Image (cartoon, rainbow, N blue to C red; front, side, top):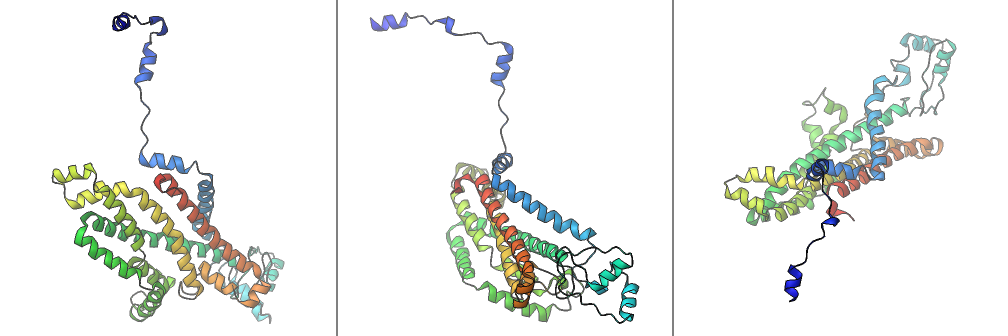
Length: 366
């Protein structure tokens, strides 16, 4: 009886309204799907800390690229020999019995020779951060130090990314004895002292490659920088390799990998076309976090005299010069400026790396 009453019930069509053609089009039309990159950058630019870090790094990068193009002082030229001033005027100044000391001119001050030029009606560009002990403009040396740090950090991270990604992907995909042997090699590399190897490489390179790199950019940078790149290529990729290996071992058990094997896809193609694109999040995050580590390592080695060669400036070598007791007492701003430069670069890159982790790999959020 109850079933018969239930079947006899009629729907109340007054509760429904007819849909017009426009509403049908809107109902059928779907929101365009967001790609991995679009979705990741959307989350990234919603992070205020990331925006601040990107702004700071953009200013630093633009300054390091463009300021040396128009700055009148060079990073390696003393004021008496600088092309910005007239050589004949300086010789005339010396012929008059004057001997100007260009070292440690304070910010926005002028030496006696520059004061003489101003009195002669010539334009003299101020030293906004003064000069160092050799009479070189300190501001342009800070700018070049930033450039060196950024270049070293970027290329060292690229080396780590390439070697670590390929090594970890091969180890994680093949597994078994291949993985065991490759991971034991990683364990051995972890135990090697990187600072000792950098010192040894600097000595070896100085003895063997002195003539080979003469007159090239590598001679200007110094053997310490070359040894840093080599050590990063030999040692620092192991962390990336372990991260990629773990991701590959988790992904290779999924159905799309089995389907690729079934249709006869080669292992190399599976690794580079199917597995590594699914690890792009962890690769981006690890590479981004490697850049400040490389910059800090380069600054530390330059601080102890194993980095760039004189007169090429580095933020670490500039901090080392400013760490002398007499300089710290009388010219404290030199240590503050060089230290803050390292702080802003490393801190901004670290915070940006954390933001990239949250944006491109939300599973790793703290």
